Length: 633
Ligand code: WTA
Image (cartoon, rainbow, N blue to C red; front, side, top):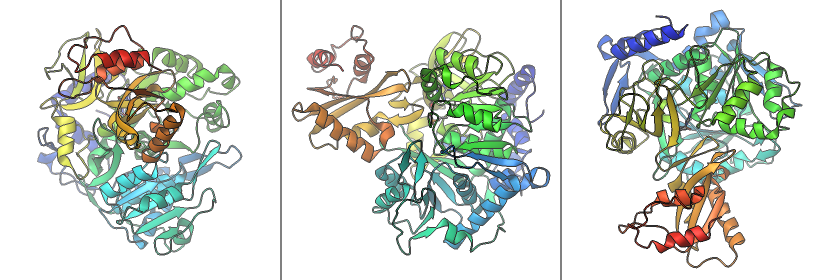
């Protein structure tokens, strides 16, 4: 068996082998990496899904940065590791060879140590999409500190929650970020967040926008001042396979976002393997993933997956429609990108801008395309295929989650058939099951239900930080003995998988996960609001829009004003990405006699399916439904 699958027949063979011998299969894959000490032979995997307890490669010792960097120095030292494309088209591109990146990571790792960082510390990273973000992430991993990257679009309150939950002692940020025509004052947002975070002792600030900021003496230091004090010599910390590598906060159906925990050994093995296989990476290809490193896609397929395989990864600071809707295609042409991995939202929005932005752009270097983050509708798939891939590039529609660490269901691009809207097949080692609402496995083809996974894989989450019970309840209790994804899924008559969307109270807005409960809690902070119910509805570009039904003490006299006040609160509590598209003021919400909100009914109303609401007789007051329907936005 080779590390990279070469044909569809081989995929089938490897898949079968991985089902029959999962431990031997993963041990073999793990053997392709550099371990300072191998795992105990009888301990490839130790697991049960009840607690849950999942341990891979116990006894193994490694450092993921040795696998991302040191291992390549001899053969690929002068190869480009990172190509960075700035937000502003007039600014110069920056590139880092493997050798240079290794040096920068070692230097910054020493800087961290100089500023008190130790193995096991939690370090929050809130930065723009500049190479220093990747350097900061890798430097944490090098010294065994656990990184918690927070997306630059989250508000001070959200950051503060995350920092407190993980008890971070260091924050790495920048004065500001450029995003399209906007500047985001990262440092002042951090200052506001830190008012309520006593655990943070140091803030390291990168100069990027040169905006006016305040530096707090004793706490804040400049990256450029500190970096000259250290050498580029930094031995990688030896980590146990199950030591924590990072925490990444993500939304669930209840409460505040939870810190999904990934560990060093399993995550490394899984993202490296999936990167090289799904995208069929070839030695000189340039890989461009348009995600932000603040999300899991950026962690796994901008930083770790490509670097583990000695690939060249392109990192873009800006947004797809700045300075115009041709930006991604300009980047593809300028850097001669071979593999493009993006999100359906971006595709739909660029599709709407029209074909003029693609005309004359040299996209001939593209060989393979990928999609991630949300279901891709057929129209967007076909447009991507025809206009970007020029009908020559196969598309990998990749399904996975923050919790899965890496891609789980996807065509192995270029090998075998694809079908618009279908993520197709599980990757080797991944044992999918579709269950009904009672948790019974639905066998055979032409079926649909809830997507679960019945056997561990190395990249899966181990816990939710500081609250293992929450991890159990969220993922392992709905259907005993299975990991429950929260997604609905169908398997067609040929055994191909199609993800149909979330079946829980999680929204997917522009590929970003947002919990309805989070938005409801934010809206409820408005002094006039009594209760709120938030649901998703189909949105032509964002995939899902956010529709809020809000009960105020009395119907607002000035709806526009109250709506604006509510939006401000959501932006303050979560960030602009969670802003409701529609806010409807209502007199009551459809509730059962036991007081549970019937979201099914609200969803139908939000979707505009007014004649298809279903049974309302179990409601406490069926009249409210008429009232809501009448006043629908
Ligand atoms: C959705 C992003 C359909 C799904 C990597 C999942 C998808 C959630 C796809 C995870 C896809 C992701 N087709 N739906 N190809 N990829 N999703 O944690 O609902 O930000 O549960 O991870 O996105 O979002 P997350």
